[in-house]
Image (cartoon, rainbow, N blue to C red; front, side, top):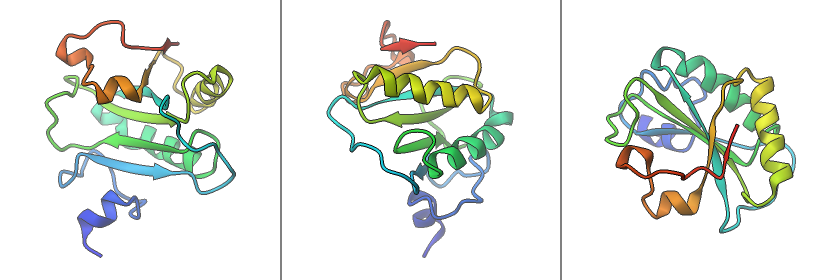
Length: 147
């Protein structure tokens, strides 16, 4: 299997987002426990971190996703160029199946706090992403939650 395919499929657990330039994202998927399938109302917590912290924070989040402590999946921005990226930041998206299930969305947020993500972070619906709504593009009031 080539390196790019391994990175895209998440089969390289040692990949460091700060060093990957071949693909824009690295992925993690739940390996333990059951979790509802994503609905049309799926969404994600957006964890913005400094580039020098992305490898360490990603390792904690990836492990929690795989162990079934978060939602069904997560992804992290790599060092590949991205015109929508915030300057001086990398984003880690932690997905949930339905933003209207407030109990589940807040449960995932609490687990992120236990992982050390104690600063305020936004939650964005995937529908807004599909519609091209981005803060970097000048859109405002996108977040469904911000805590």
